[in-house]
Figure 1: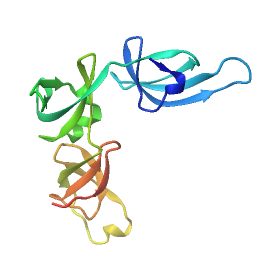
Figure 2 (figure 1 turned 45 degrees about the horizontal axis):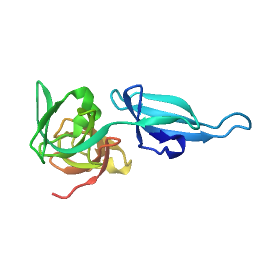
Figure 3 (figure 1 turned 30 degrees about the vertical axis):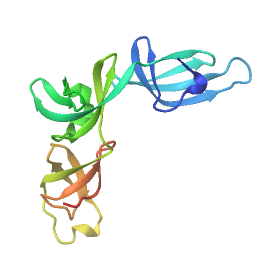
Figure 4 (figure 1 turned 180 degrees about the vertical axis):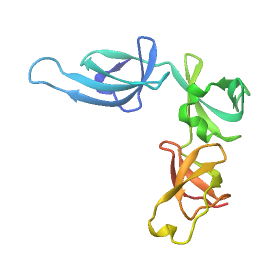
Length: 187
């Protein structure tokens, strides 16, 4: 159990049988009355964010979550298939469970799969992935003067805005947290 003075960002708690992750919190001590904590919580099952006010002295249960390192194998009609490298156990996750993480999955990518009560509920991708540009408009002389960007389709199907000088076949580093181009990668 966690008391309000133990709250921190990223802490996983359980409220009414649902796992939540603390996104933000603020301790408030009014002039009169009991102190409380305003808390923003992200539902780990459906990604909705809620706000709760928790009175000082109240405690929240610890979420029964576990992260397992797994390797992405393939995608088919059943979903996205992952394998635990330690015991070769395989699990399939749906598109909803992956969220926008599905746009950056490539074969053999090692990720963390989040389990709640022994049931897979989501994934945590590496912060950066290196992907190949498969489709983008050619650049023209003078494009780089404005410092703008153009859309580029990556090998996984994701579309990212990239600088004009990049072309099809180039490898780029992408930040999976905000789907943004970081830099050109070496081959």
